Image (cartoon, rainbow, N blue to C red; front, side):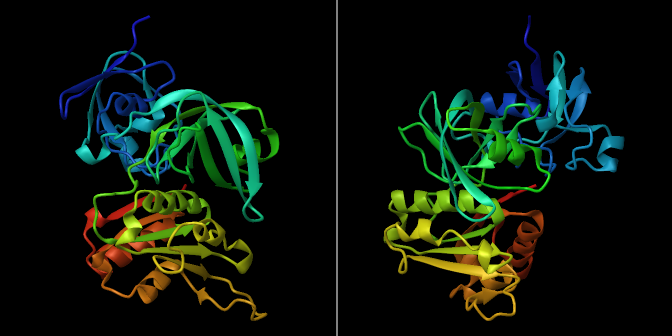
Length: 338
């Protein structure tokens, strides 16, 4: 059977869609720089216009499309499969061109450990080497679920073929229910990756700021580990902010303590929005973006920023940095967790 071809009239590129791929994954697997962010239907970064042909929509109510988008005939590349040859109009840019081509493989669960009462680390071993950039994510195909789930990596590339994910249990979340309650050591899943453009920029000379909220911990830990392994902290600092609801939710410090330079080159700042009335919490309080503005010693435009967490946190940080302090967009790299 002939595989569908996808032609982007905006730049003239053509790629082939393999079985099981979406238009977005097929494009990225071919090395094309199709615009995207979450790969999960939430952000709307991969909108395209269908000019010719037919597509299958996987998630008709994906929040990444507004009613206006739907009325104008727009689609999400991460939620559409070509039924045959298609012609589309989609935004592309070099910044979205994958540094490492994503690939599908099988992976086996080899261990877990609890980080907090609702965040657990899951360690998988894949068929081939674990090749990815610090800060990237992978799409996991879990037993019994029709659609893939995006989870960020917390470790760095390695020849042990290990992929580590720090995942927060979501109430009524189908994906976290399967991975927390049904998956046992030795079980296999499908793993496709790497994806994501909020990866470590090793060519930047600026001090690094990592801001995490909730399970946004994982990619920020990966970035900190990657910066340490690359020797970037020999001549610059890394500030690591973790935003938590209560003191019980605070985490990350023990993973940073084992990195060379902790306490000097690596500065950890936990921030709690609901400290309670018992007086046990003596650290920063309030919203994490406010703590970033208070705690950093230099002008914000002098840093390279990375952040991951829920949309309200990432939106507040974007406004703080871009509107409030005129930080250039090229120095801001983030993932919104939907």
